[in-house]
Length: 324
Image (tube, rainbow, N blue to C red; front, side):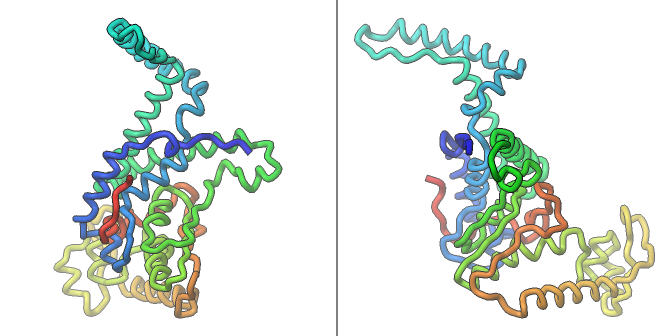
């Protein structure tokens, strides 16, 4: 089995990660810490950064691919020319008995330029404002997919390649001691199918509420009649007027007009979903129960992320250390 060196093994933009992790301590609205307190919560920014850096290859391991790109090669050659001039000037001023520094090479320069590009993606990824920014998340997911498909191509002759190296399915993520759920939540946000388990039933409940249940309701209207009317573009006045009767005209499309759809079936639908969920878990949560990260109907790598809905992404509320 061929394994490439990962970005986390070489370097990380620690200043940006630490700053974003420290900032999470002051964030309340929309953070999982508001769901339930949990000791030793990990910052979401750090969890997201670590998972991304573990999945993405370090550029030093695919220099040949980088140099085959004429644009990247020309940029590296221009940068190398500058560095060679600086190196020569430094050597001319150095003492005769000083240890000579090795000259920079084209391979080192092109790898460093590519690494800086990955750092820029990572620095955007850890910002709280980008927790639900699909443009930023898609860039990170694209890098993960690229590294994974590179690994699949290199291990195509593996005896179990069809199972272990499916280029159309990212490897699953399992946190056996999930606790507050920062790692499986961020793995799911980055497109991985996340599983979580814990001996503590409170931790199981937290993870179930964060990574298993939300995808089941992705794209569905709110159950509450007033919230449903507002979600569909109907004014609050109309929603309050008809909330008690449950017979709320609901606008479709761009909200330009009501189409006469009643909110009562939606409420019934919501009850059915809750009943189904209760039956699924037997009305209780067993210790060590696994929490499915993505529903089977969600496309791999393109799935709905809990952070797309209010009240889930955010601060790992309890004091936590930033990345060392």
